[in-house]
Image (cartoon, rainbow, N blue to C red):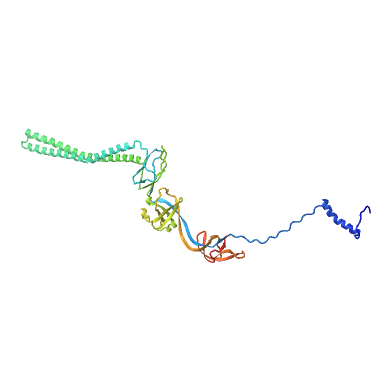
Length: 404
């Protein structure tokens, strides 16, 4: 043994060697000589059971209303749209404004007229002159015939008188022969005048026909001028209110066929409902029309009130809802809606529609019991308004039902 090193008693040498080898790895590990031991994975954590979460709703009590939105269209039973018949011409004058009431025959607007007014004035004067001449022509002809008849009658008297004088002389006497010659001369004049009278009669017929033709042609020409002027003008065909007028700039020209002004009889303005939905509005029914975010009180009226013919069998059903307060700013053809009450219930139980389930002809809901478990409850339902369903039996007010 070297130095002071001692081996404890009682520990055999073999055991000593064993202890040294057992302690050595720990010493070496602390010194970084031995390799690191592989780290074992962590043990899984076992979580407790988590109950499923449900969206729920309460069974409520109140009033239910089943409604339907019915479409309708705004129109006037008596409405006229006007446009110019000529295009590319300067718009000369506009005599009305929107909202103005007009009577049938009122001049609303007109294009440039040029020389037409003077031509029409001259044409009217010429026509009146021809008409007056035609009216007096038969009288002139009658007076001429009477004059001819008077001359012929006078000639007959002269012939009788001359022949009577000739009989005062013996045959062959020069004076008597002279009276006979004069009588013959008058007779020849009479014959010629009667021929002229017959010719004049034919001429008179021709004159009358020519006068009629002249009046007719002058009338046609004047009518053409007036129609040409009428094409440049717009007149109201009905009594009513100007509901539309084209906005204009100075020097603007006309556009053929484009609506320039609209006149409507606001007493006949209605919202119309066609088809099966018309049955919701028997005559006398009052309703509120929602159109362009405004409400319009209206009442269903008989077509005869609007000046329309009664509906015939086979015609598409039509309801006419007349506005109680006409609005001239509404444009023809705009759409509106009317909410119609189909059914309603007062003081009833109801739940959201999504809570109702159905299977094999039965209806039921899901609920949670006291342990938070989902259970089934059979129910009976009534009115459905699209969002909620009436509960007739199976639930109580305040119950909670699952809706997802």
